[in-house]
Length: 222
Image (cartoon, rainbow, N blue to C red; front, top):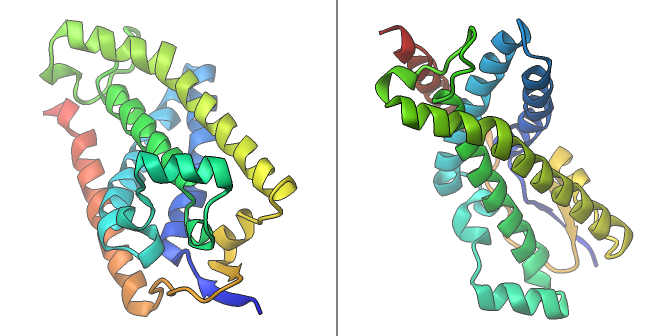
């Protein structure tokens, strides 16, 4: 008998799909250059807001969105790779999926952080460039333009390949639960809290993160 369980709360789903929209926009505007860089910065601040939100939501969000719910040891990861894991390994993020999430968050944080410190030496510079040495700005700009974006593209490619693997080989649908929130499971599992109070709290948290991002954006004008 299949059990319908709320796995992904609405704030987590919105975070995911906002990133799906913002990241291609960032890559596109960066490669167009020129006046498109204005939108590159705007999207960058949006992603900064989303990342700050997700870092906090990883501790106070729905059960399966919390980092403690999908953090795993190397031993558990190896066991999952060898055997496919137990049923509870596929409730939220699998051990391999958890590793992918942490990698993506880390690379995105590095990309946004170095973007705040980058300078194209033409018309645009990050708001934190005036607060660090020219050597730091040079290193951050090189990473942001020559390393970080390609590392991010590689991780996104692996993420998409993993989705195809689960859909075609393991016959597990990963996209549908991230849209509707619910997952069909072979056995019962605790549901993530996803009520009005949770969503209002997430909205307040997002507003605070947006305010912090706006404050960071103004540091270059001080």
